[in-house]
Picture: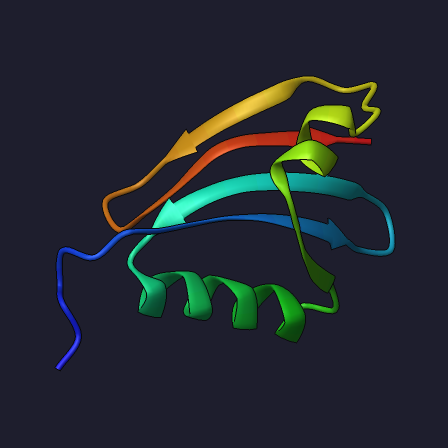
Length: 79
């Protein structure tokens, strides 16, 4: 049985037809898996990356922070 309070943290590079971004996300592993599947189903290419790649990602748009009850996208950097 999965621990309902477990929090997983990861960095993802996400590419779609019109945007590239690197996400710093945290949340329950099942919720993160659901989020990743939703991105893939919507035509995004999703790749796990690391903190160094997040910190050195060149971006020219605003960095945003998004929070919801089950998943936190701590920061998203858009190219």
